[in-house]
Length: 219
Image (cartoon, rainbow, N blue to C red; front, top):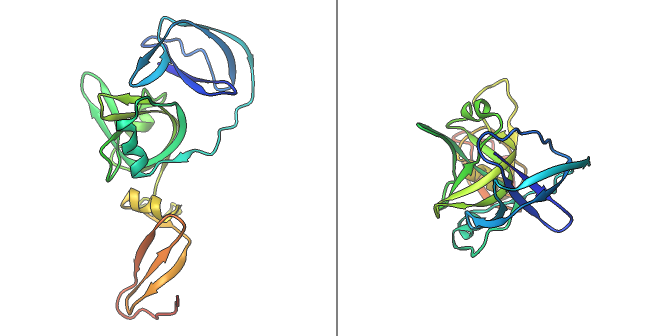
């Protein structure tokens, strides 16, 4: 129902609404004409705007801002939400009814992520209940509760399938995800007879080894 337009200064959401022809692809260069307004606490073009494709260009996404719990909560008090490229970890929650909502439970945060109008709804529905890393553009905050994200990628974190490799992650990402199969690299900062504490630049975590552990690590 919408697309994000970017020039050399900033990004903005262009909302087209239900029934949009979706005749644009990533990399299309367009001229948008129309009125802007504040919706979901962010500036956007509304569905009365028009656009004209003029050329194409290559697109390289920037490194996303990895949202912390504090970053997420700060959106609730922001006077205005800027469209920015981010990544955030949470658990997908699909609610089906008259409309289908694709939410993201962010552990420890007062805000709920909202995967807005995904292009492949079936793929997102299949992720219901799974820990994921969502990458995309924050486009606003709805109902003083939902952090709207137009996604460019959704990565499943961890899993229980022995044929699938563990997900490489930071310790902070592991703690936000809560459960799954992960591979992390860090420094041992504490040791006892059955476990050790591992630390990287983002956080620390206990690695339990149990009775009979060889205790072959040192600080």
